[in-house]
Amino acid sequence: MRSSSTISRWPGGEGRRALPFLLPALVVLCMVSLYPLVQGVSRVFYSYRALARQDVFSGWENFTLLLSDPTFSTAFLNSIVWTATSVAGMFLFGYALATMLNSKHLRFRRFFRTASLVPWALPGVVISLIWRYIFLPNGPLNAVLGSLGLRGPEWLTNPSLALWTCVIATVWMGTPFVTVMLLAGLQSLEPELLEAAAIDGASYIQSQVHVIMPSMRKMILIVFTLETIWTFNSFDIVFVLTKGGPGSASMTLPLYAYQNAFMYYQAGYGAAIGVVILSVLLLAVVFYIREVLR
Amino acid sequence: MSLRPWRVALLHVCVVVMIGVLTFPLILLGFNSLKSEVEIFDAPLGIPKAPTLANFRSVMLGTTFSVNMRNSFIVAVSTVLLAVVVTAPAGYAMSRFRFRGRTLFSMWLLATQSFPGIIMVLGLFTVLTVYGLVDRLPGLIMMHTSFSMPFSIWLLKGYFDKIPVELEEAARIDGCSRLGSLVRVVFPLSVPGLLAVATFSLLLSWNEFFFALVVMRSNVNYTLPVYLARFVGSGGVVQWGPLSAAALLATLPVLLLFLLGQRYLVSGLTGGAIK
Image: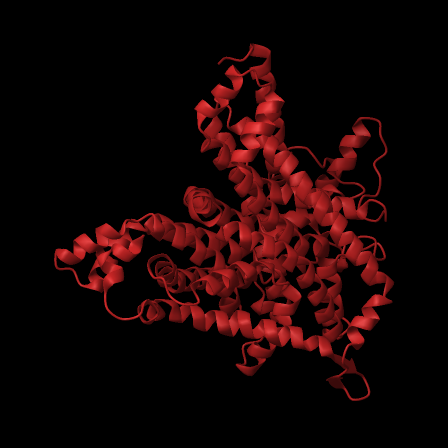
């Protein structure tokens, strides 16, 4: 399309003209993204040996160790459960909130829309600290339950609850982004489309499923993929809220990788866990790239 | 199309409840920062009965807070400036030129979103060690800039796509140099996009925890998230009053800037980056 414009008809290859613009970005990306990726992945073939007091080449050892490590299997399973439920929660609340914030019957819409963004701007560490306080045995949540005559559990130290407290905080943190994106999608829908559906006798649910969802398909898929990647990779909430505990009840892959690399000095083992994360996410990324570049 | 009154009322109740859930934890933090340690647990949900600034005083005077705040400020502002300077020309090139490797470069930018922190930090550690940047702010600035770049380039490409090439051509016909048409025509029109990138980078850098945790080794070099995560009061137990005060001070400045800049970020995201 642009090939007819004067700018593109200038002599010389476009690459040569683009290069000066791209050079700073390319230099930074090579130094801080491409090289570290290669370097980081190469660490999986080395293990720390106490005797030699350094990392020595160990081939596939780190991966074979992973296969027989029960904490790794727990962390893997937790990561999947945690990501799946968190992203589902974000979409459930995000979709509901976006639909309501889009209603023209709602008063103070601007105020509510701005207020709904608050968690997006908070540092992950602050979010985690607030929720740690809320979940304390003598904290506000159990105070509310107590006033209802219920005895609140020990949210953070009960092995069957710890992971779910992380899910709640993650959903809270991620809901604004999903809301604001879906709201923008809803606002760009043609009102005639919905009116036509209503005239044809479509129920509320039918118009949601057959009219709204399909026209927002691409955006929903991209936001879904992004949130999946971000959640699977995220570290702050589990680190501050439960430290993966009690035991390894709420351990996730990023936290376990961090502990191995920086607390137990097993950088190679940590990197191997990182490669597992990367392989899972590459599936999501291929999907994401296909949707975005389409 | 009109709704029955009770449905309108129900709509408002639902919205108020959900917005309440999304904002109340922050209000709670504000309450706690003004309460004594005893009151925090005696009345965990109540409005402060005897508001005190003691928590803020002990944070400001008794800890390294102000130094860490300064660090966060330096890192965030440098990241914002660097990100804008580096990504604006790159976004322009992605929008205007068809060069070999363009698709590959786009794919690389999109793929970086998924790189696990642990792999990147292990690799970056080697780079930082070589340049003597471990435990120093410039190292962190470089990392934060690179994290903000993929998204920012993508967002700006979308912005430049919407600025008609004809405008540049007209400026050139009127005797502007190539650089002149960029500076006088394209740049002013892309200010909302640049504000979106600035808001995004500010948030990313100010809130980033994992890399700062690994790379910063000494108390005086911590940024605020690391300071907060390592916060322990006297006696080894967490003191929620001072911690809440510190967390509030670490949150409010950027929250306010974000609320000012969010409409640029949101329209940038929905107009170019996501759609």
